[in-house]
Amino acid sequence: MSPPPMASGPRPAAQNRPPPQSRPPPSPAPQEGGSDPTLLPLFRAVDKDGTGQLSERELSAALVNGDWTAFDLHTVRMMIRMFDSDRSGTIGFAEFCGLWSFLASWRTLFDRFDADRSGNISLEEFNNALVAFRYRLSPGFVDLLFQTYDKRNEGVMSFDLFVQACISLKRMTDVFKKYDDDRDGYITLSFEDFLTEILKQLK
Amino acid sequence: MSPPPMASGPRPAAQNRPPPQSRPPPSPAPQEGGSDPTLLPLFRAVDKDGTGQLSERELSAALVNGDWTAFDLHTVRMMIRMFDSDRSGTIGFAEFCGLWSFLASWRTLFDRFDADRSGNISLEEFNNALVAFRYRLSPGFVDLLFQTYDKRNEGVMSFDLFVQACISLKRMTDVFKKYDDDRDGYITLSFEDFLTEILKQLK
Image (cartoon, rainbow over all chains, first blue to last red; front, side, top):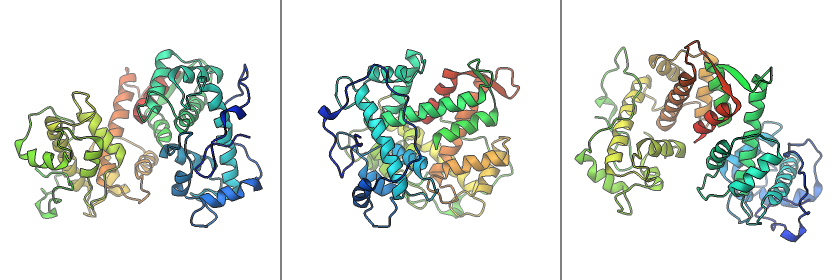
């Protein structure tokens, strides 16, 4: 398993990556799973105040991109919401193991779609990823999506923003499917439905 | 005019506020207007590097709430997008005058709806503001809206978040109206319409 980069562990070397496959797997989904005791030293290093729970601040300090830049705060919060099973607002060890494994899966995908091995995802690479994930999106929309998540205006997407963009797209797609009962590609929404679904995406 | 609080000027004393009126005006809209030379000293104080343009960082450092807490960064960015007429990414003096006047109008409204003069807007006060703005929203939705913008989980809304919530609600309402041609309270959206409108609200 290729772990995601964290301040406490080096980024896996490029030559250890598996060769690209012709058909990538579907985008990673959070898994229920047991704890991985080999992650305990890492967890303890991140748990600066030794409470056995990682706060948003502790996770923020630990989660970094391949170039050691800090994760976008929205990605950190997204991870906490996704893996904080007991709704404590913090990440315990078992929750951390799930989060780590999830980010590791994303890291593998990120490396696969980073075709020129620049350490970032370009618009073209992003488009290839979305096609591989079986989205059918117009070039104009892919452009808008890319621009929205290129939050640092770099013209490329770092790992944290790529994960954020893909998870957000998945969420929005799931909401759309929920309303599109007859699968005709159109949904009808009341005023409060519309506003509520937008607000949920803002969280 | 009651200016919004900024680090470079004291908050106006409560006793200088106009008495509450029975019917408040509609929510403030950005105005095109001339420059106000009396704001030049303030502008220069905020323009730390003396470029004649305020960066996001400079505005962030200057815009504070009544209790001197910094504005939420999303509110600062919202202000820049709204008033950066020449799309330079920064705020020149004329743009600053518009921004300042806009925030002053919001400050007056905020004080009016802050019925207990706590310096924050409670859920009940927020509901009263929305009713005054002629929104018809269910209690459940108002609750969700309040929780979404109570970003510091304080159970109350500071000035910056109140402005952000009201402007976002206005924007979402305008989008809905754009699609609701026949004014029946329902809209029909394609997959990309739906995603595009959500992405626009995230910006």
